[in-house]
Length: 460
Image (cartoon, rainbow, N blue to C red; front, side, top):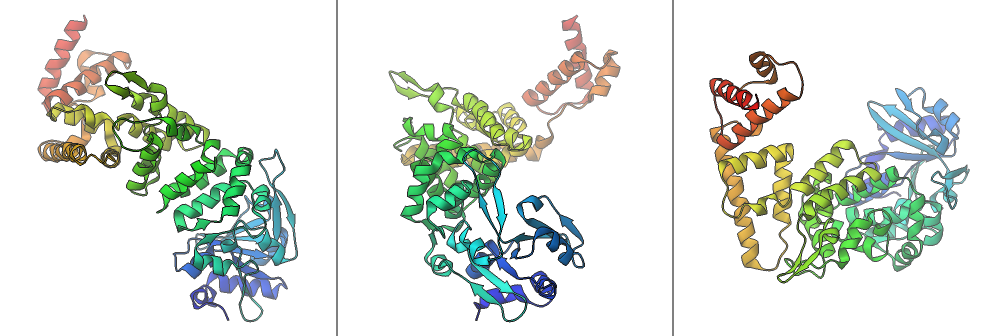
């Protein structure tokens, strides 16, 4: 008897149903395993179907050939064959165990003929359940009590956590990813093992760390995960600039430190990766800019230093160039609204919109979420300022093309009018025209050519 929630996965015309027939006819076992079983039992959406089998990779390719439209072989040396059908990839992995040596970033893979050994080497008991299919009634395999842990919301390793995390140290970060995305609580034994073994994360590639951390950041329980990672020393292994905030006192927030404030900001933001990364890193420049004055502690220009630090850390974690740019720009700009205490002029609004570009909505949300003070009067004043800014943006959008700030003529027209060849002077002229657009609003082509005349004469 299998739980009713798993039955839809096993329809005869489903991918699992078709593959079960192929493997049974070939004389091999096949089982759904891991996240798909877990999520089906939780009633969560199932993004991927992962299978495990006693067939070795070359044999898997032979078995799925009549059904798969193509194969994805990037994981073949680790025992995984991706069968592509109707645009979806279904990963099928030979029963195995993975072990990382003390200094290797690549696992040593050995195959097994026993699904029980395979399940014992999985990361957590809630992922160490399998639904055996093909050749008879389906059977739910749960040798480590994963079903009970699932409904109690517990993250526990099938074997001793020192063994599980030693086999693959990335599981220590995955522990907090599942805390963030599922809201499950790690056992004290698991947390103790992470605390003792945190430095083992150093052997894991930056790409794998980035993938796990990105999933963690967009979880519903991200604050709990971040706090937990800091407490056991895991965050220090790959984002030390963030953990350094714990020692920084911020005079504007009644938190014990800037770290607590930053975690609170992350938790308030929408689950968008770039936005949450910016929230996480927006104050990392404060330790390097801290100064003591008669008025108290200051962090002048921490956004400038922080943007540079964010770029460096994200590059080391192998985020894409666009992600690095977007997050560092958000960090750099997050203090901009606070500089306009006397109201927003049209030119100030235009410049803000121009500098924010496509990040405008995320930047405004970051600025709002950055208000975590318990001083209600100050919080209301800041929110009113942001409200005013957004009202001014909306007002100007109705009057002019605010999201496409550009002069009325282009570079080709500038070159023709001034008889210039492509080069720096063309760029200088265009910047002058754009600056006039920002300061004074829309203007005609005739006015643009008059400005060019004046600019060109003054340069001569």
